[in-house]
Length: 362
Image 1 (tube, helix red, strand yellow):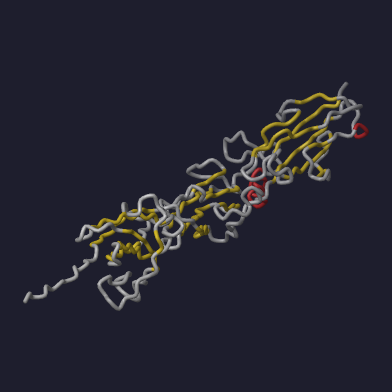
Image 2 (tube, rainbow, N blue to C red):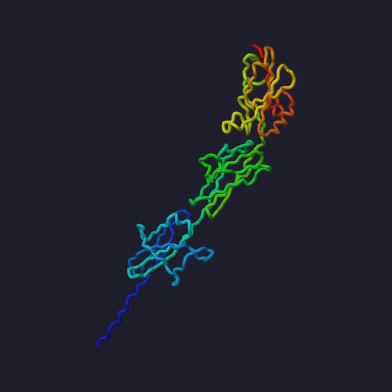
């Protein structure tokens, strides 16, 4: 009698799988993961991928589940649509967060191998750059300078969006200067640009912090502002001087100021026509005593009135210019009394007061 034979079903072994990123992952940059595996039974494998949110380090030191824990549920895996089923690309828009990348290798009999790789993007901090757009960068600047300051050349190596904080950290005692949005409509609402008007001399320290949400490095720069300089009468018609000029008493020519140099209130001022020096005129005749103030509205022109003069008369005219620093100008004028020329400094050829002597003659 024959002995019945025993038949033992073959054991189907699960595939072996590993997965790794092809490069270091940075915030805001896409990355490709590649799976490697084999089947002990030489079965053909099907590859699928999944993403789950990584846990915070405050919750667990291991951001992704333990693949060997039988109690850990696996995510639903969606078949890969990439050209190579063993590759999976995580888009740049997703790498601003931390994830767990799952790969599954399944044989025809349902045996599954799995591996999990954490995707925790590295962060390169922003590179803050602070610069003076206008005026041209210099070691020092005149009083009353209007600064346009920019952070627009700041960058983030990872391409992360940045937020900007510009601040005035230091100003001279008594200064009321503030960083404010610029009036230029092209940059008025751009947080990378701010404007600053200074009146007092000293050091102004401007700082910038550029944040990508994870790092907030800063930088600063110092603006050295010089003391206010008095105005200087540079050009008139006729030119001032000690020479006795000739004019027609029946049709006298006006005296015109063509140019006044000043750090805050030049004349003419193309950037701000209303922000110029003030002109104070005084007039007399034939050395008849002190000159009298002429109220002509502070204009840069003085008309000599024909009916005021006869042939042989000498018109004495004096001009004083004042910028916004009235106390400094008053001190200069007080120091020279009623002298026809008032130099800003000893030996200077720059004047805040000039005079004319005009003989009315045909």
